[in-house]
Image 1 (cartoon, rainbow, N blue to C red):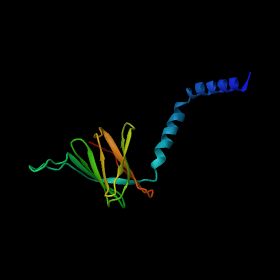
Image 2: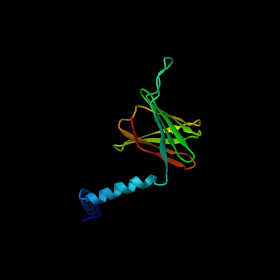
Image 3: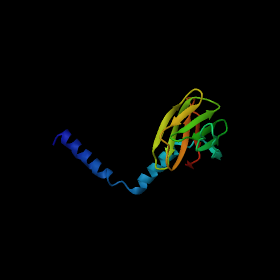
Image 4: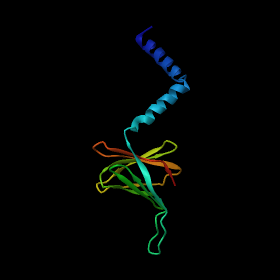
Amino acid sequence: MNDDEQLLRELGAAVRDAARVPDSFLAAGRAAFAWRNVDAELASLTLDAEPAATRAEPAPLRAFTFAAREIAIEVEVAEDALLGQIVPPRPGRIELRTGDGTTRATEVDEVGWFTFRPLPTGMFRLYFQTPDGSQVLTEWVSL
């Protein structure tokens, strides 16, 4: 038997063994992954409003403000998008994380603006990270 045959047998055994990973190991791995943002500051929901429409222009369907110690994340729910701004303005990257585990990310420009299309369905939260490493994670909300 040569080295290639031995390697193929060992790889085959590894693939078969991977199918027998206990559920408790998988749950522990998922829990460890969930802790990757433990250092992010939690931004509390401070405003959840449904503004009244005017004749001049349609109002957003809903508005949220999440406040952390040094950053606020303001979000308006428009007909087809989440429109948001970081206050005070700063660039960075923001993720929209849904309750089913999907994540979408977009860049926040230098004046703090960002947009997510299409609208999320169900529960979601936002995770904002600045280039200097500051992190803010919002509470869960639902449209």
